[in-house]
Length: 159
Image 1 (tube, rainbow, N blue to C red):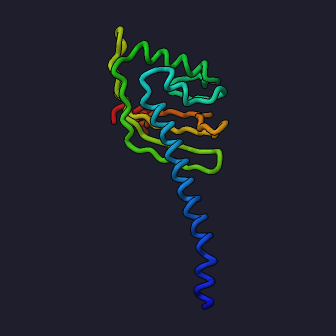
Image 2: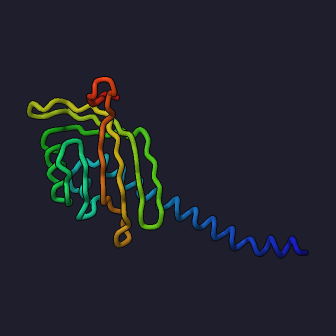
Image 3: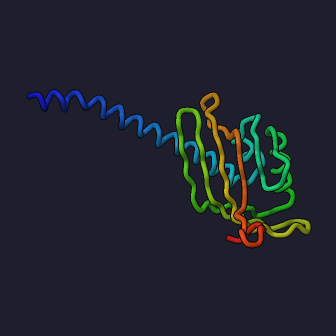
């Protein structure tokens, strides 16, 4: 009889744990969806919709971008100078804790240059910090980099 009562007492705890796991998986899926959108956006509006207004971004080239209006300049540059932009997400992982999330990935970027701009074919590492703001996940910090050849000190662009 004691085993029955112990098992009965455990059922709500198990249900709560299962709900928490489901909520965590749902939040992970939500932050990954934001990161997939920013990486695969074909319009500036779509890409910029993923950023918080006061986002900080460390892109490949200095200086650090502060605010979505500075990040928008990069989107405008890429949209004006490249066509057929494609990001192949090779791997992507997310960690979520409450209203804070980290998403990190490796991506293969491909694009056709326009107006004399060379084609883009590069391996990219991306790390995004997201905060849940008014119920929506927004990127508050983004870091982009390329691998470095330790012998030459030069960037390795080719995957």
